[in-house]
Image (cartoon, rainbow, N blue to C red; front, top):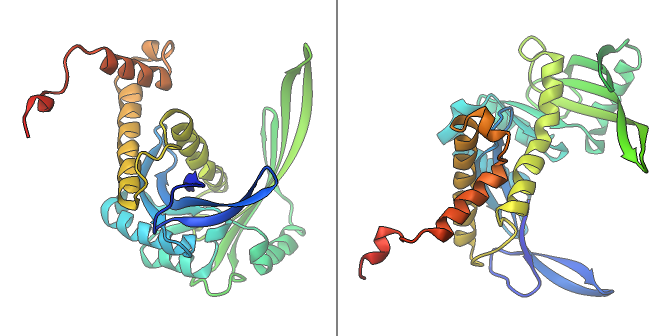
Length: 290
């Protein structure tokens, strides 16, 4: 995740990249970070954030973050889910050594594993999940040793999804068909995590983008840097995470379902904001001298 890009302000913890503005190449400064986010719940729960240092790889920062998260929240989850970048022996072994399973997307960087799985699956009849507007063929096999350096054999799940979408265009309903191929590798045995559960878990990877980053950037000022300092940035993000989780908890666990039908989560946040701005009294600590 990139935070607070700027072409004017920078600090010692900033990364740099060159972008083109009106055809002219300029330097942009920005911060990068890794976020640990729980998936599988109706509440978006970000646990922690770690900034990526200049010139540092994401995996190194992710390991620092996980060391801290495992110490504080290790009982909250059974597996670590990541994109294709995390399908590497050091990271998978890190998870194994800490008693956690790993799930990651398979892409071109793992050619040997992908090639072996494609060859085997080409000789197998797929399983099938037939749902309204979605037909999914899947192959799921354990025992792949093609990922060099990983301490245990891996399991590979391939899903070929055919999705029918219906859209209203020009006063007419138009149907389009999309095909998607998904590949995941995991240390989970089939006996512990069924194929459909692994498929669902793999798709939940995008929750951190859709339910967290997009929401916080659009409605919670995550795209605004109040103070350009590494410590201040981390403190702001963590405070934002706490406020976001508390608001969701109040909305989903305290408000009655009938009330939620006429009030969105963003609507509730706006109500709280308006109530603060209209208050005739202020916080008691502001009366204290010093």
